Amino acid sequence: MIVRDVDILAEAARREGCNVCFSVTTIDRELARELDPGTAPPMQRLRALERLRKEGIKAGVLIAPVVPGPHIRP
Image (cartoon, rainbow, N blue to C red; front, side, top):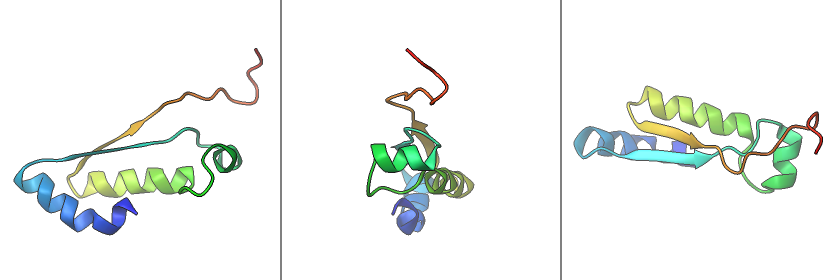
């Protein structure tokens, strides 16, 4: 949904400045479905980040919580 307002955010970035950050818990699509049901898939979020940055909007990713991959065992 954030890219829907990219024109408004770009204008705000030019005038006053703005920052956009959103979470990416994992880049594993299946795990993301389990952890964040009903949200945008991880690669869609990363494409949104790329689009925002290309428009001159300061944007970043919050990496929290960090979820270990399936190959890591306690």
